[in-house]
Amino acid sequence: MTNKKDIKILSQILDIDEVKVISHSIYNEIGIILRTEPIKLYSVCPSCGTESHKLHQNHRHIIKDLPFGEKPIFLEINRRQFKCRICKKPFSEEFEFARKKRTYTNRLANKIIQEVLENDIHSVASRGIVTTEEIERMLKRCI
Ligand SMILES: [Zn+2]
Image (cartoon, rainbow, N blue to C red):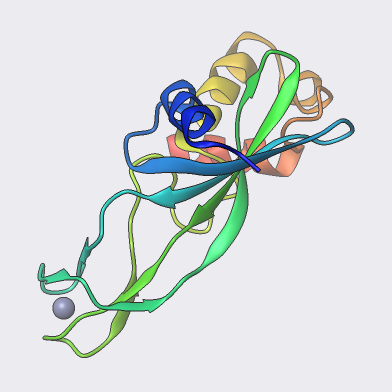
């Protein structure tokens, strides 16, 4: 259980204004998992720009974020699908902190890219936070 005070502190430390932390678990071998929920109650349809409050589905998955000290941090995020009343189609919401279909946050990608520029892909991958494949994807996105 995570109490209200912890949740507030964890959300402040996480410092991503699009989500709040709702609970956390610490696993010795894995790291810290922070369960988050979006703060906004609506999203804007990418096709027509209409605000939608009609939740279609929840889509929870886990992505990697910047480590906290020596502990890897994983965020469980909920990228909801809303249904647009004009287009009559569901769409999934955009977040500024993490692109769709990615397994990591943008700020982790930026940090890794910095490290690769200063070192090389294999030594950064050997630290175990991200795989060589993920680094290549980050770099492609950058170019
Ligand atoms: Zn629409």
